[in-house]
Length: 385
Image 1: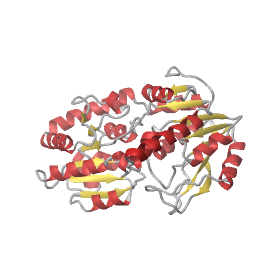
Image 2: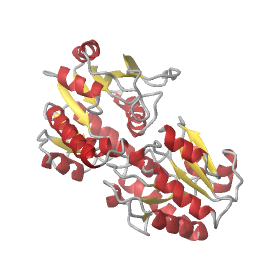
Image 3: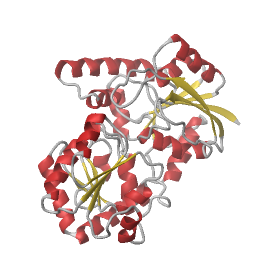
């Protein structure tokens, strides 16, 4: 069995879109590869990883906290750890160009190096850190330079959409690209038999209206637009509840905690019960590639309200299988939430159409099959966007 090294700067106990994707991919990839994961040693209790068929190498993190996490330092000692892990692998599968991903790419010379593009790095850097003006421009230039340097040393980039592949090419990244659309296991993520019972299971009254949010509470996800819109809507629907799953930045968490009707649930190993209890799911993000959380909410039959970012604008058709609103527009979001709260038939119709979209277009089996094939060195039909 071939040896695969997954190099990632995001892993358990931290939960985000990258980690959710990896925890879904790893069991399927383990049928073809002997897997080692090299990841940061984040503060906190070490999670139970017995269900993941992996060997795990932890790299020490800095005491310095940036945004809501402690990064790994770029340094000789950590590079040696990464180089040893790379030396024992036949295929190196990088999830980012943060320190571990970047060091794995540099150490992977002579190996097959495949990078999965989870985000547009220069967009994420400026929006996650809320950079403005000159600092934002300098940050974009720096991160683009690092991205070109790193990704042009890989053998293959797996991109979630043709648009992302073209954007990378336009910015000087010439490495071969293959499009693999992110999918969802629709047998795991499915609508509840009873929405009322789903609400009771998580401690809600069955007749309360619920709106949910699952990405991390970070500036690039713009959760404060949702919070402000929810506060407006709650003036008309005073028993409505906002379910916020995921960890995040202290200042944002504090603002959510101070708003009545908000349930701060933190990161959850199993998000399905909460998605099934939501009447409406909101994605207010400023930048995305695909948005796995939105697809999972759609698979659970939620009516979704999203910003038209990344590939989201391709699979959400306004007022057909979801609703769209302009980024940062509190008024438009509150208006759409009120419309959905007032009309249960509209919520149900959008939720059914959303579920149908995922089942017909976003198969998890197809995602896993294509990624596994590409890691083995094969081709698949959507290459070189």
